[in-house]
Image 1 (cartoon, rainbow, N blue to C red):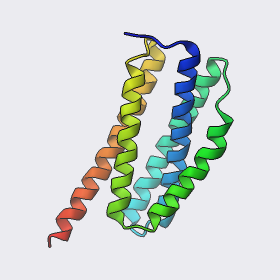
Image 2 (cartoon, rainbow, N blue to C red):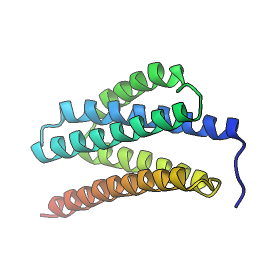
Image 3 (cartoon, rainbow, N blue to C red):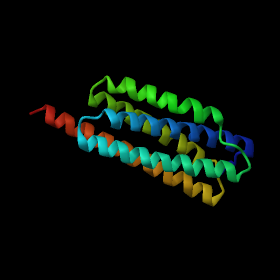
Image 4 (cartoon, one colour):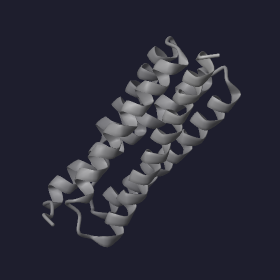
Length: 153
């Protein structure tokens, strides 16, 4: 199993830190605009789960003696709110499809990093984040299928 140099690992962790911050703000923005109460509650819960990822990654970066990227803390929320606002102008199907795409990207990136990490606590942390992203994508996919079924009637 190829291991990363520490600086490359920190760079990867900061990438995820920024991505997770963006996801928190994206889902919060979408939840505020959602007219369907169930969708609103799910988006709010997913945002809370993504916030746990932010906290975990911030702690891991700090534990390694590095500082979480300030750029991620400043730019990512703006991107998340902007993306959420734009998606809120679309319909629910487009919003779900975009969220699935984002979750699948996060999953692919987590899988790539997991293959390069030998350290057990970090390995387990990344796996737990990957599983959460997979569950989010599955919920969005199921909701999309439900909307498609309802459209047939």
